[in-house]
Image 1 (cartoon, rainbow, N blue to C red):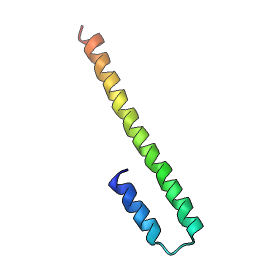
Image 2 (image 1 turned 90 degrees about the vertical axis):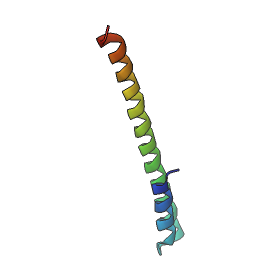
Image 3 (image 1 turned 135 degrees about the vertical axis):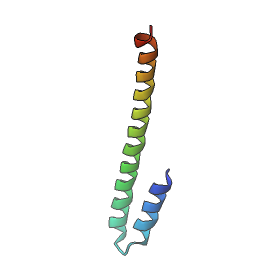
Image 4 (image 1 turned 180 degrees about the vertical axis):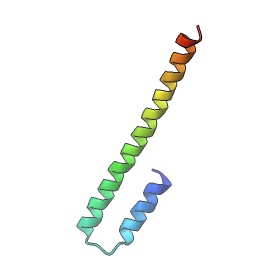
Length: 60
């Protein structure tokens, strides 16, 4: 996971909340981290598709 994710987990664990709240916050942070990674991957795939399209169709 990313350093940002790890920092968020450390911050959550240091908070003075019940374990149930900490667990829910960690789960939410994990889901958000997954979404960010999938979005980044989607953008990279989109860029590859755009580049391939431009190289094969436009430059012919």
